[in-house]
Image 1 (cartoon, helix red, strand yellow):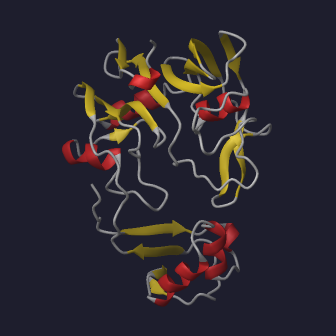
Image 2 (cartoon, rainbow, N blue to C red):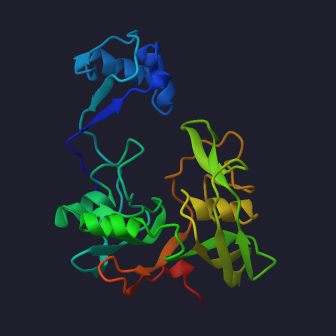
Image 3 (spheres, one colour):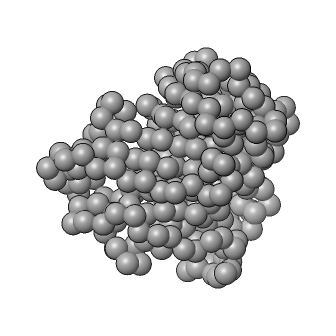
Length: 300
């Protein structure tokens, strides 16, 4: 299915980095994935506003002012538009996300064709407690109340949750079990400016890997993450010398290859969030939510 949306209005409160910078230069620098000609078209059409007033491309900016621009409706790319409910009570909703469906709006492509938009058609107050990459399938947890959101959010990274994934990694590890603790932080990217990747000055990240099955040139692995950095499993397995089969972005070393123009949302890799376990926010009883992996990630 490919359908249009109602467009979107972007709002940004300018920070110190905008002081004295011309509007066009600021937009081109902050959003390197959008061509200057596109910004000139938007500015010329009066769709870029400063404190609610259309402005010229050479207008000098200042911190504290509000920059807004409107984007007319557009047709979003085709994606799977289905999900299954795995758990539902008065506090929480867990669903099975298909690979290819973005969790949240982003990248300038997706707004209505997202898991969040689909879920909120039935559960208007649902708020996602985490997100999966577009190419990742499996469990996504939503809070249905503010209290549940606050209590479950406080558990992440505190050693009180279990997050298990399955992945298809390239080449064969020489050990059946190993841990990866490569830090993750921003590195340069040709289109986005920066992307998350392995970086010695990045934030702490930790994964435990267990080989489930060895195949011809690939390994089916189970990965437990005790931290939740963006694209952690893709980065960590690549950093360990085992990039996910088909991953267009992360190569050996856990960084994009030189000159790589692939985006984090590009598809091709095989990753599935299989199990999420944690204390229930209402009464702390143990809760475990599982989602069966796709055929390629099942043991034979």
